[in-house]
Length: 279
Length: 260
Image: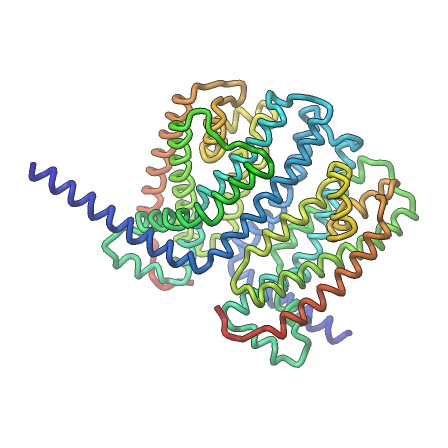
């Protein structure tokens, strides 16, 4: 009983830290909400371009790679919303702190930097929820008639949650490379480019040649956007392999756990190189 | 003029030297700048490889439009579009004042100190795509090349105009680097044949906001089938340049020097 109370107290403490950090990040970023609200313009404009591209492409056919025009547009709608929902800047933030030496102050705190950064992401995205995600979703619904209703809401929500964590962990790993590289702009951009392409953010992955689809199937990037999008639609297929929704979400859990281990290992190696001098 | 060129070259040299402090990161960034711009061509190639098309356009014609667009961007970004991030950054941390006290125009100094070496990767990408697409198409007539050169010069002028508008916005909209996203989203219409858009949108991007001039208008001249409204697009582009110069001056007057 005493042990249970102790664990409960500990959970309560961490939840308190998470809540306080998320709330302060929310308030801090609320001052820049007009910057965030740019997505209300940018998101629909990019979507409008996709609308015309795919309307032109579908002018002479009803399906392409098994997708109808409506499904294709829904795909891009979901991709946009997932992008807003899971966005974070853990990579940039960490490399900036390491480069100017102010990371030192985080080492003096009684909370791990990883936990703090994750709590900041939650606060940041909570603000984004009403400043950019809901307005963009409503624009998609009323202007473009794209209904962003998941086929299986429970699985879709779980998959989105995993994607949220996975994006954080991968970005966090990129940030950790600053312990070795100091300035990580190049590797950060390289990773983002590779990720956007391999995660299906530019075009559904089943548009790639068969050999590349097979390669992408074994890479972890698909779990960031492609898998949650297909879970949202209710049907997963890549490289000719169809998986049930619970199975593909199970794989996503494994990918998240693997990423967590990678992040921990990288951190353990990288932190030894920190000198606190900056560069 | 000679003096200005000398100052510009010194600015470029300094920017390159300071960027070279992180050499590995610089070369990687340059390579990535090239790859980032390849998103639209990759989508186009994948669409055609999957047996679909933009009606009335073969793959290399569509890629030529994107090649022209990227070529324009590849020249603008390293050589004068740096005025945008340079202004936003300086206004935010208060060092924009240093440009105001120099014995040269603020605009010129903002361009000189905004040279962006890593964006040369975009230029490499633009030249590669343009050359590749053109090599797979019938060779244009000398007259078409001449018309293209004139239109492409206007493309660069329009890019400069956009740079001025975004930098001007950066003076009053403190620290907002997302103005780049606004630019990217609007100008993305210029990456595709105008014919795929609705009639009203075609009119808007050709005769209201100069977007078609960034890609499809010059490219169609090379293809020997000039876009309808080419002359109108040229007129609108020149008006846009005048507007952007006026906008920049107007925003400059609003500068408060308090940072952000």
